[in-house]
Image 1 (cartoon, one colour):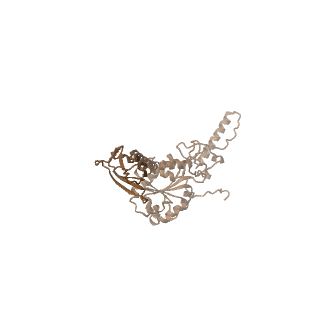
Image 2 (cartoon, one colour; image 1 turned 90 degrees about the vertical axis):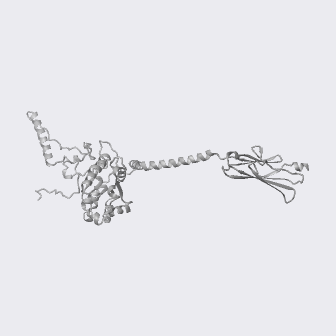
Image 3 (cartoon, one colour; image 1 turned 90 degrees about the horizontal axis):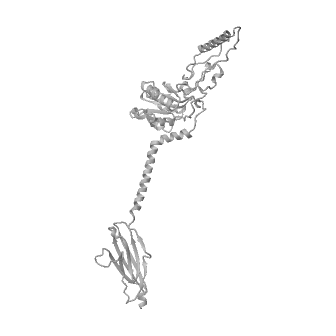
Length: 417
């Protein structure tokens, strides 16, 4: 009998020592269940301890519920004790032990470390801040990155037979002339190296493109339309802007429309709605109050819509316009005039103004007195030069702006007639 009473009980719950991390302010119930031999004279007692101190007195803040029952075969006795713990402060955490006959089962209650939550929160805030920073950098530097990528890896539009980078159509009004000639043209030509063809005439007279327009637009890589109040007063804009827009889309791929913000919000014209509907086929840019600065987003967006410019040395011609000048064949005296001489315009013209080559000088003949014959040869040469220059004025070839040819040359002399 003594051997049965001294036999150690078997702990059923918990199966092993447990470590729990309940939150502060919560309530938890610790379950301790053991099995031991059933004997009448054996009266085992189950006790609870916390951090080595007994919890059996009435002043203990922890309440337990004990239960004892006998197994079905009558040879085993089960004992269960439920200890309720209210975690109201850090003192409620610790090591709780269930003790029966030198057998102990422990529950370790520890508060989850705040550092773990803090680190997770800090990591989340760091990721969120990084995303916000990337978003701000993208918004602020998006155009710069796109320009850098386009200028480095974009497609070069060379050897396409085009003479100009953009055809600029604007209304013949004081404000539009000032904007095009004193703002747009200096910025694009002098700062960015583009070559513009300016036209203040009606782009679609009688709602149909003229022969001049078709030829001029075909010589330009892009089409820029300054869409102002004065421009919208043209007949084709008032009567049928939709058909006119479709014709412009046929003449130029993805035309560029520049509208003024001060007028854009007040314009009730059908053109604005049509441009919004065709936003995938056109480029609509707004000129704002701060767009006048060279580093504004307006110029960056406009440069993105224009063709890529290839950098070149100052002694070389622009490869996009080299040997493509609109030279009048009737003004070429010798075939050698077409040869490139590398003489850039001193005022910064994009094209290259070739030097004026003369024909071979007359043979120098030495007369009886020698020097007079040489002087006569020089005089004849000078007279030949003056005669050639008096026939044709070619002093402004580098800066002339040729429009579509409306004249014709007759290569028949009077003798042939």
